[in-house]
Length: 387
Ligand SMILES: Cc1ncc(COP(=O)(O)O)c(C=O)c1O
Image (cartoon, rainbow, N blue to C red; front, side, top):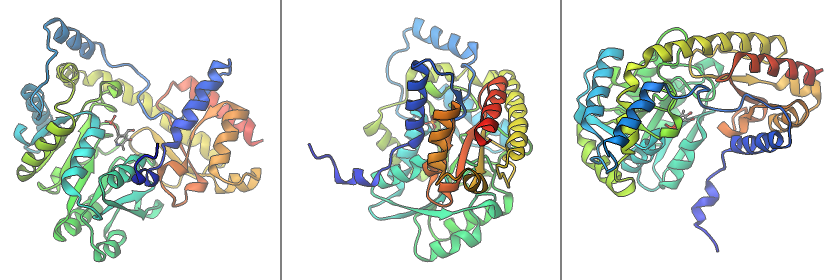
């Protein structure tokens, strides 16, 4: 069977290959230090699980409204007041199947065939694939340490001249863990919206920051589409629940797509998520652990010769330049480095290739969402490997 031609433009998620091989090695009895995973290493807090049980006992097993359950939308609306001091009506909130579901809806209402949409390179790999699948054209703008791996006016302006339907901000970013500063945020919003485009803000790593909190795009614009979810800060990856906040005039279109593509998000997950907002103590404890891991891993990697030129202040990732290590070890690129590190040292990390092409061959992403002792073990093994 020949499947759709558009699939030739979609790329696999390489970290899944690392994951598959790591699991294969574990099955063969090898001990693998997992620094490639992009999800919290602690379980969903018990009150959330209890709320799910209670919902099931009360037979809450039907669809919800396409827009999502009203109590959950009200709670999210309150959260925006508490966290950011912004007033968001529950009528502008749509509950989605993870942020991944929200992206399909957002790109679905924004893009017509051929529309150009700006994203960063490096950036979260699924954006470009979803944009392509929906007929749009991802415009991957190379970003480096000088702009904290984020967009700004001078990076965006040349692409804007060629026409942009919109642009995406991810702060904190995957894979770099960096945040956009207020000046750049303002510039990006003004430039894109000034040109009639739409700003989409991926705020999935909000709450996981180690200094200044991340700002929501709603502090800069009431026209932006904000996407967030329960996977990372709330430690609910497997529940597949997210939300989006859209301008009033987009609501009808989003609801229509949601009805057609997903009907509604998981009912059980929506009931469970209501309890998530009362688990902030659990999340604060976890954040302290991430921060200990972060500081230790940055320091250890730098001592081993990894170049981390912008301190990652959010998410749970470190994006390291390994150009000098590749030369020292006579290894061709970061992909081969990853393969050898996994096979020879038993440490799984993600190659830069997953996140774009700009500098990809000389970068690696480390995730420190794992136990401190395992990170220490990983560092010992990496040091031996480099010898
Ligand atoms: C930047 C970014 N956005 C979105 C997602 C998807 O998250 P969800 O589990 O909400 O679909 C991820 C997952 O790793 C991510 O890193």
